[in-house]
Length: 460
Image 1 (spheres, rainbow, N blue to C red):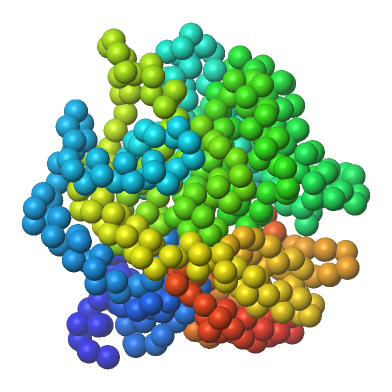
Image 2: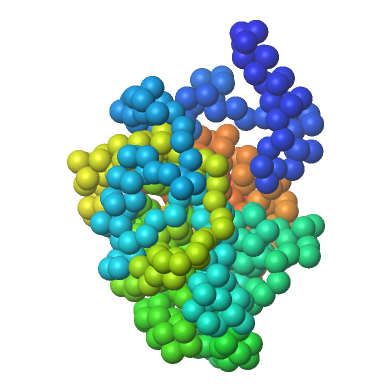
């Protein structure tokens, strides 16, 4: 190893504060350091190649190493490197806003830019609160979200998050968040206490819990329902048939905004530009980020229905909210170039055509005793691990600790696969490869998984 490489590893060890990371794991070990990406693969500082089975973090849609995205950033930085959207506009933000609304469901035609997904969620909640004050319903401020769901780390977005362990150290959080059951049909018997529900029946039951929560709190106090088209945390829960159609009915009945949190599910992840389109519902607000630039530059957005902008069109009303780098010129230019790639290479059709093949590759692992459920949509899938397939018995907290953090995460990475092994809910492994991936990558994922999960079962 060269001295510059040693210097990088030492700097990481001595000065970096990593996100969502137990630093104790690296007291005696070097921090894995990724230096290069190409297509669906990344390379570490030692030159070892890994299949990027998570697209960075559900983000690198068009794959790594796209020169034209780097060139778009450089060109824009030379022309206009920075200017805020505080009472001023710049061309790339205007062009990108128009482009996004051209893809979005009908009448969602106002775009408020942020620098990431958590900020987009924060923005949506703040807008919901102020909107109802401006239209004469000042008590409407509460929000409904789902158990185990993750919506971000800012104080408001974290209040929406349904993972107790992520919130405990930061409480008290923003008040007014209400939790309802999620759409994990694999665990429907446990969640409902009613055995044998079909997906449709469970979807209706779960949606009706939202109606009950609104009724219990008082419809005049509830402003919004936040839900991901496919819930990330817990392991890729797709919505049962009819679920979002029923949510739309409920929100309309009680004058509550339906917010589709698509930080992960937008920009082709499910085979459609927006996840709500995959499941045929029209939200009032979409929050998005990640894949808008394929991660080549940070940006996020709230896309809102025109009626939510109406109170701000005249008089002295102002949405007193913003971010210095929201809609950054360089990021907006990169997003436009990224969307050009989507259209030129027809990535949405590629994902739709290959979704069955990806699912088949993962479902081929059902013969392993540790594989309980395979679920997801598009290029966004999770495998739930169990101790007993027949009873769906899950692992204890100690077993999950030993299985996921003590073995699986490192073993998968050592075998050349970067993905996520997590236990936010039940133990799951998640996959979200770049949208350019195909059968070769699916087979590689399945092959590595088979070897590592076979060894994991032996260790239990």
